[in-house]
Image (cartoon, rainbow, N blue to C red; front, side):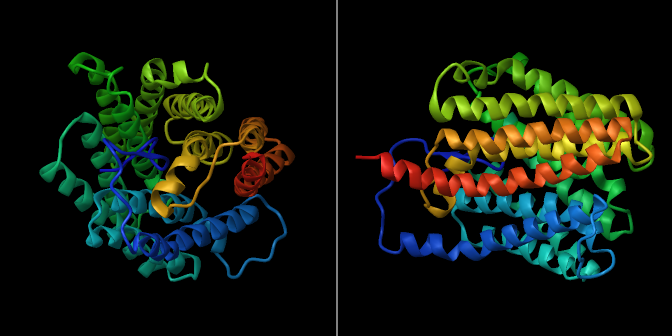
Length: 382
């Protein structure tokens, strides 16, 4: 069974890889439309974000920019996570989750608000079914339970969204989905470090606090957001203290690059958690935007950057070798976040806009550098 490293990133196999069979390449090709749905969602989310930054860009319709958050968290990242999970489970019915997420993202981008909400929520429910299948048929463990809780947070947040809650009101659920998914994967990969009940108790309790905070945010927003923030800050410290990245950062090549991505991501998760813990549910503006981008860009996208050289070969069987050029978008991502958060917290709109644009540029640059890395290493290989 293939496993992901870092939520939306990497996979690994236990034991020798099975022999390639006729048609394997074709199966990978049939996954391309699902990946294309994720990329279209990303493009729409980034375009909408430019409008939210106050730039004079043409938008296809009024309210298009408001879909930025769901398109990014559920359309793009949700599709990637559920696609990798379907590949790992290796059952055709599991691919309904990424298909529903991709269709929901397209509907949302096209202005079909109600169908978009229904499809994106259905994708979360289907992903829960995928995890339950693994729990009942293959193995159990705290790492898998945490991931299942993350999928349940997606579904619960979607139901609230359908019921009329705004995107801002379901932010703790969206954060819980991504943070718990990634945390569960890190627990799996650091199993030796977290062996024993005492070692896993801390991260599991922190994860439970995040989910409990999301639930409490419905009747008591201030207390719920604070509890979610406390859980995120605690989880960041606990995972960073035991993650294998502490050792692999002293290595070279891909292990060091991935470790830098992970450790930087944990730092941003702690920042976001601290802001929520201090401010409760921010009324909007500075602290609200700062915390959102710290967790969704600083934490989540660091994980995507760090493990993309593993996830793409596993899902699409497309080789993406590591090359030092991949550090360029990583540095730009974190530098842009520093500028963005400085502008958010200080109320300087010019810094906020500059940081936002540079952040989008870092995501586009990563795609370009990934292609360049493949070509550079192909030339360097004798």
